[in-house]
Structures are given as structure tokens and as C-alpha cells.
Image (spheres, rainbow, N blue to C red):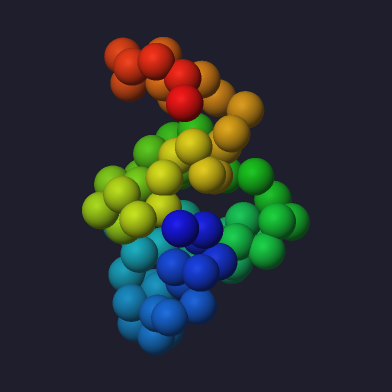
Amino acid sequence: MSLHAYIKNLDKAKLDGLAARCETTTGQLRQIAYGNRRASVRLAVSLERETQGEVACEQLRPDVDWAYLRGSTAA
């Protein structure tokens, strides 16, 4: 699922909570969701963790070889 699709269904309190748990701001999340900024690798990992895998690192940062880091083969 894209970050945009994920956050569009969150109310303000839940979006604020997600941002806090990921140590970022709601503005930064929106910038990434709309494609104006790129998530850092650290933020991509945090978002995957905090969304229970609904927003995958691979979707946020396709330029990173996540398969290698996960110890699996590339998709």
C-alpha cells in the first residue's frame, strides 16, 4: 500500500501518533506521501514497522536493495 493511501484514512490524532512514533512530523509524512520528498532509509523502516507492514520499505525507497538487506532474493 502506498503511504498516501495509508494516511488518507487516518484522523489527525492517528496521523500525529504515527509521525511521533516514526520521529518525524505530519508535514514530512505528507511531503513523502505526495511525492515531494523522499523518505530516508531510517524513516522507511520506521514506517514499515509502525504500519505493521502495510507500507513497505520497497514502496517508499525502491532504490535500496531491500532483498539483500532482508536476506532474500530480489523480487
